[in-house]
Amino acid sequence: MVKNLIIFVKNAHEGNVKSRLAKSIGMEKALSVYKKLVEKTYETVMNLPFNKIVYYSDFIEDEDLWAKGVFKKSIQQGRDLGERMYNSICEVSGETKNMTCLIGTDIPKLSEEIIIQAFELLSHKDIVLGPAEDGGYYLIAMKKPVKALFINKSWSTNHLLEETITEIKRNNLKYDLLPILNDIDVIEDIYKGGLDYLLS
Image (cartoon, rainbow, N blue to C red):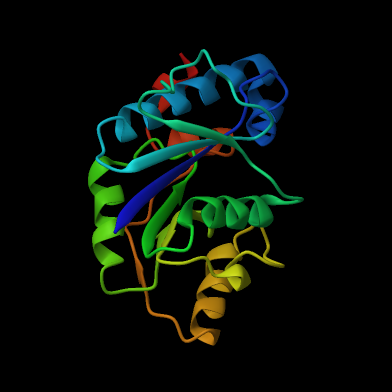
């Protein structure tokens, strides 16, 4: 069984990342924070023994830290975040029995151990979610794509996790939850998490 790890990244250009954070610290500083978060994610996933695919928001960057020999590269396709996530999972899952885990790049305390745990839980669950403190989720893993989990959801709100779990139950699927982590959307997230180094 192939284990796929999808990493969603935004092309790192000023004004294209961390718009909510930029309202507090400016676009240039927000871009700097985002680049540090991407570097931290890279360090976390670099040595994991999975099929790793980076999905860019706009275009594939050839000369960046995601080395071609280690990471496959693709572009997100879809009208909203849910559609882009679902399409990416479908693309890498194929027709065979695979496990697919999708993460973003704004969870500085995401660890190798948590990602490995997600795949381990999938051995006896259909869906695994990593709850974020803000009511969303930082990770979703599944054995096969389930479109209902990605359609008509309240993305970037504190209802997302609850809505997703309700959908899982409605589809009679088994699920499990990983540890709750803090993602970085606004300046308070940095201070609350003791992550002041991101602003240096």
